[in-house]
Length: 78
Image 1: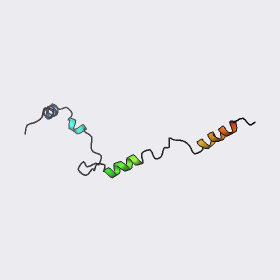
Image 2 (image 1 turned 135 degrees about the vertical axis):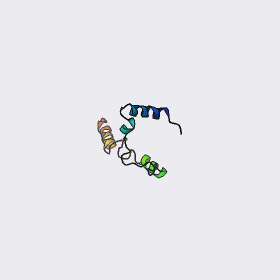
Image 3 (image 1 turned 180 degrees about the vertical axis):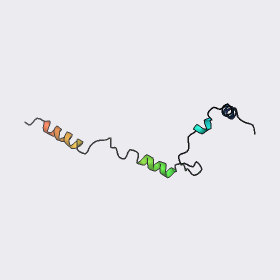
Image 4 (image 1 turned 60 degrees about the vertical axis):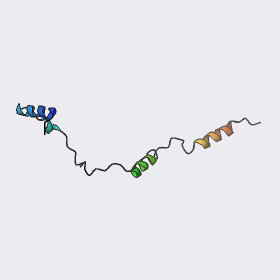
């Protein structure tokens, strides 16, 4: 098979005594690309379902009670 241009440049750098770029490439840190599995549909649905479960942006438990109490007390009594 023919060599690519990048491979030829790397070989030339090694022949000239410079650093081989292949040595500096990172490792997979224990991840084996053959055994790594993608996310299933069930995992994806569970992730979306519980993504914002911890945060409640609507209101706090006592908000409506305090507003209702304030409007009743603020009415003028005759």
